[in-house]
Image 1: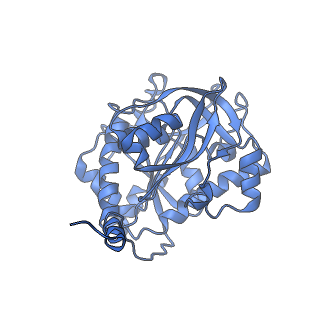
Image 2 (image 1 turned 120 degrees about the vertical axis):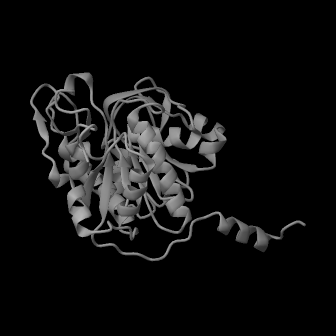
Image 3 (image 1 turned 60 degrees about the horizontal axis):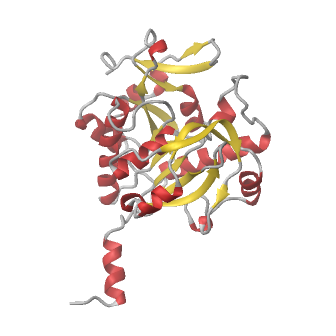
Length: 315
């Protein structure tokens, strides 16, 4: 029997998660670890750049490392305890790396959690953005998109104002994002708009919000959001403008770029505030915090502050 318009709309609503109103004033966001570079193995098998923890904290949330090579029970517990997870930038495989396998478990749990009516955001930055596409498509669809150490304004697509990510964009932030070199790109690969539009799993799941041209004039997607889930991704690094001070890079540290970075941090934390997840006990919460670990300051040409972990001994 054919459905009328009202019945069809009601059917569609059944496919979209329905959430209650939550205002969590103590949000906690996890950051996923990844395998260390060979030259850093003396410090630990896996790592997370301190930039991401600082980025989360500057917008009023607390931060927790999420480890790799754990079982499904661990990732289920982390999703149930945290108010969101960030997949960071880096340089590991999108399918078979320990990070990718951990992200697969988290992604599955996040889908199920949202479908059950419990708000749980995911955010992907650079490699994390690429990882979200691989998780949704089930394969790596990246192509060459060279924009290493390049700051760009965003080319917004039609309808970006109706998105959650940019729907409340203040006039000054819009001006900075659309006219100034305030988004920091550090990548050699990306996903093209054509690939996303021609791949059913991606086209049905994400809305492209902005694109950019790489140094060779090839267009790549620079930001998107999921249609029916609080999942977001930027190919650029909003955290670097405030926390990466390596003079070998050409990062824009001007006040406009700082405000843009703060906008994205504020948005992520605002999304986390919509989640009412919490740790089962305060002692579990305290034990999970990044404050339990000490970062390493590497004073070579990379000039970076990094948290290293050994996945064979980290609880």
